[in-house]
Length: 258
Ligand code: NAP
Image 1 (cartoon, rainbow, N blue to C red):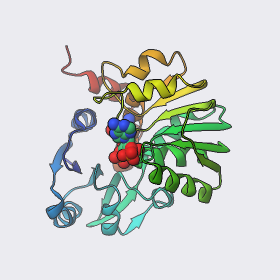
Image 2: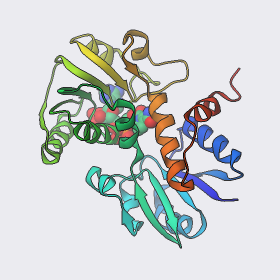
Image 3: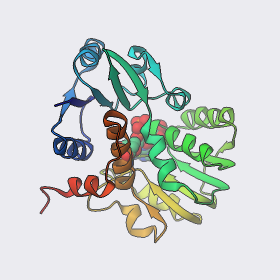
Image 4: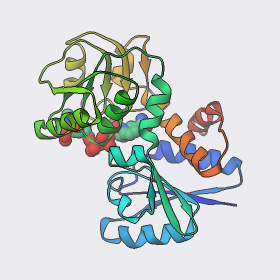
């Protein structure tokens, strides 16, 4: 039996926990949630590195965890965030599957211009994915302008054109990289989305019942649930070293739901 887990604070992302624990149980493994407050984080990570075979990292530790790792993949280092750690003899190797999940789901889609709503960690991983997919221009809209400017500058360093926008503009891909539509009031997001035309929508917010964007986005819609499943499958593949059925991941999500 191998031991895996997730470290975060607070641990709200129960859907991710549900998928990982059910699928790892199929392999006879255990997946444990470690809700660790900031004052105990550094000691807890050292303990995890010594004890478990691998762990996911979630808000607010995706950046600070890098201080504890002996190796970090080139992509995770460029993004500046790690969401998966594999342990090797008490040392940690860090990866970012948030970005890779988006690359896998959007491969082959045409994107000359993407518009990202949000400028936090998920927006950063999405922007990096869009650069990797060959998107030549990435526009950023965010409630807090200073964060939008900082992400836009980073995108230019990754090699694509970028600018901050204060109103919607037509684009091939629209990405919602905020929690809006998940549990908060999303009138601002819907108003913004309706202000321009997009071919494809990637919604990182997720809800089993669907987000409000899912109800109006039409056929070319990639849901946060799809991203969640793909990034979880990629995590398990990093830990176990073999391919995981996406359909098994999806059914795990709905287990226990009536
Ligand atoms: P984060 O670093 O805290 O960033 C949050 C972003 O949302 C910021 O741009 C923030 O704007 C914006 N925001 C939050 N509340 C807002 C509001 N009421 N009105 C307007 N903007 C608001 O969080 P994150 O890691 O980027 O995650 C963002 C979302 O993506 C979360 O809901 C997370 O669960 C989801 N996510 C999903 C997956 C998946 O697998 N589906 C993967 C990663 C993340 P300010 O800068 O102005 O605060």
